[in-house]
Length: 377
Image (cartoon, rainbow, N blue to C red; front, side, top):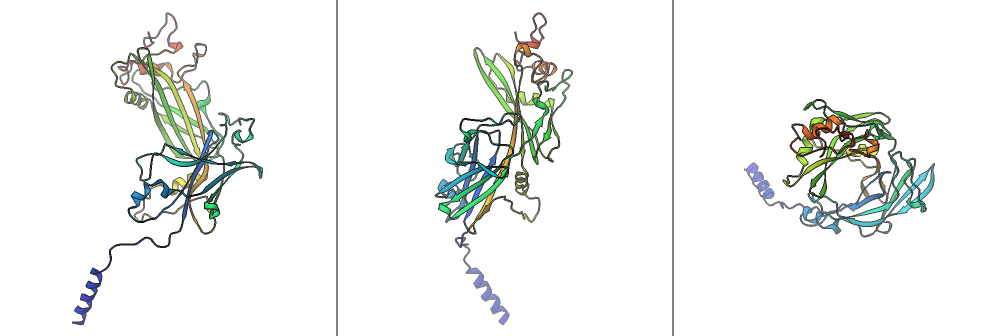
């Protein structure tokens, strides 16, 4: 009887428990900072947000911009050369409309902090300005970030060197893509980072552009082709493969279904390498989806905060090497072409794209009295 009485009391106690869990306990404020410097950019953005907690549905709160911002934020970036302070930028805030609307948080508008410089040249040459603040970032500089929140309640600090030294075979005038050999025989072209510089992760992609002609109206169509992303070692080389069959499949998939199109001609391709720093590589690795059943994940940041606050995010750098290969530059440089003659023939006459009205206006394919069968009339 005593055992039965104990069981009864236990069941009553369990059934009377409040199922509502109150998370409104002591909340430790968290600053979230994200910024990547790139010497190829002219605008450099730093994003500063706050983690939040409140009553009700967290998804509803995430849609309220004010819940994600601090009342007062001061952001500065300072450049140090050989250990000496060279320049300091006081960042301004602005609203941008580029945030993905498919996420859980408010979009597309968001607040960011920015400063301006001239971009470096393709060979990492510094562009100077009459205003020293506007000159390019120095590839040998150390850049220190300071974020002061709510009048000094918290100060977030971080620093980074710039990713630099990425070189590629695509910068050569003689580089051309070869996607086809004999008719319908597709071949790959290797796109190589001859030197990965001091990057630890490398991404390569192509932006392919072509014209669609409708009478006197001409429009540009384009698509992005990701060649891959890989972990790399500094000062090594890495080759990504651009498959010929994929090139023609993507052309066919991205043309406009417009019966009024008279013809299509090829414009050219942007080749882009993006290399990330070691800190950025570590941040990416830690934030990849967990493959463990326990779902336990460490956290990583290279930022520090005072006064016992919490900080998440990263302040780091990347380098973007971007090169445009035109279909042709001028009649005097007919030997320069983004895709070679066999690949052009395949584009205009091959089984994958031959019905899409492509023709070639390349000077090398339009020699008087020796015009190729796929030359534009």
